[in-house]
Length: 471
Image (cartoon, rainbow, N blue to C red; front, top):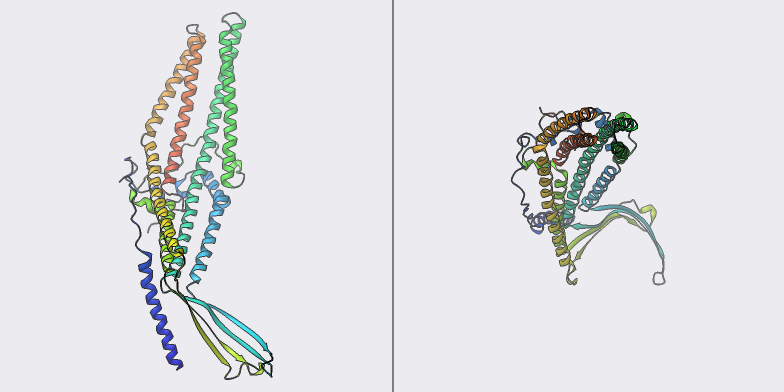
């Protein structure tokens, strides 16, 4: 009899597993079709045809050792990245809890019961020890399995979200670091301009004092001096604000020994900043991967919600020893066991279960829209950077020639003024054009450096520290 019951239970278990596997496939349904309506290719540049720089670790991509030290500090201390890492731990434990729902819960128990009432003339005590299975659900319709899949996909999405945070952080740190460098360059330029303006003011003051010129050139020179002083103060403020921003990103004050000391000539040793193939982008961008995992989790939740429309069968049981005498508890004949299945059949719940299915389906549509948008945003960001990089070298070259021309004009106008040929107004105009051209060149050089960082970031570079070796 015992052998027959064992075989029956084993057969019931195998049948339940087969039904559960079939139900998981049927209740979840197919994945929705993704319609991104994105460009078929990146904006054509000389850099798009080569391998993507996103495959490089940030330690290999960036050239300056001080910048790499600052990035390492940020990865260790940034609070947003810490939060992302803690979210991963939370999702991991949530997945573990959900996965455990597929396994029976086993617990040990011991009890002593004393019974004494009017109907029983002889009171007695019962002793029990044993182990038991509490409400183990037979996952016939895949509800628990789908919940486990949803938790696993949510965990993967959280991991990808952390990677996306790291990619963004590395890009922001690099750009904040270069902002300090170019703010320092603008400060030096404004201080040089202030010095030149003060010398011009002194020259015009002497010419006015001896009666060569009127007071007008003196006041014009004074205006230029005060304007230059304002620019000096402005760039000092910008430097401090850039340092504050970098400190926030790093999560602690950044020491002066790792800050830039000169203009950043290059941010990477790479000669060509390849973008790779558009099809590779979905595997490189962690934010796109996170949206894909969230879409999968939403599909699993639909399967779990549909499974609630069907009966739920749970098993509970126990096996142990029972005796009225404590001395006989562990003797032969004290063994006792029990099995108790329970059935939950949905009959009428005012449409609650069907409403939950609709909610899950709507969540899937939202996740699909978010996934499609993440892909569209990724292509938009990359094409924006490539559009900048397509002509940045031409713009820098043209601005460099403009600086040379304005500087020459400034020198010639000074010579003509000192010779008494032109008025000081010509000198002021030439100086203003030269100063503006110099600032414009610094801005374009900064934009060139930033575009290289932005391309690396938008392609998904920065997840790895070192470039994987290829054997």
